Length: 296
View 1: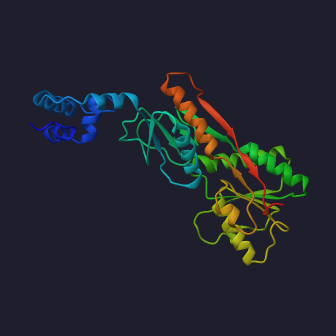
View 2: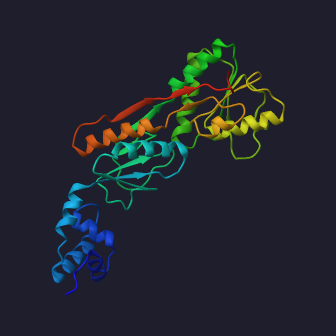
View 3: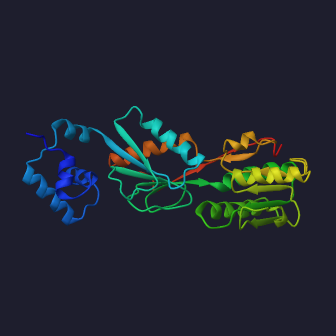
């Protein structure tokens, strides 16, 4: 007699294999009518999951990581998190959301978008669950103190707009740094598209802070075409410490926030959540200023 499998149960009940799995493991949300169809199929066939499979499911814990936008800083966090779980009986799955996940615990890594589904930890923005956020002001103050000591008096923030968590927080951090530095000569330029943006500058300030490294590199290349000397005439600061920040000439001064150490720290917090331990509601991480040729 043919051995009944979970796939057979799914076909008999007219549902997906993942739905049968959720019913068997009592994880995730399953519609009552679908659950009853699965249970009826199990009763009718006398299906029993193998002892090994039950032990395997009990032994292995699943962590699901949602990364709506796949960018280099987010992937560094993922690398650190996976590395921290390597010697533990924990399986890490990755996707753009947690909507269909049946994992034991889920983490969202994004400073731009939220996603549907179960979330136990958010990295990059504030949320109702345990949040890992970044002290943008700390880095901006360190930079403005450095530039002020070197005689830089005028400042500009170049941003893609104020449409997401990160750009809004960087805007607030920039204004706060200007206030604390007693700087009155500053400007904010909000870009509307990816086109030429040099015409947005009424004048070139001593220092330009860019909300990400990509914009900073574009600015460096545009200024070089115009014959502007960097950093002699203007200092450029990026954000994120992308690989490109080290390849551009001159190399880009930037701020490192998302890195593997954060991923490892997140893994330790997730383990505490899995164990039912109390964890901080909000964890604030101070970034590291990396000074390169574009400012010194």
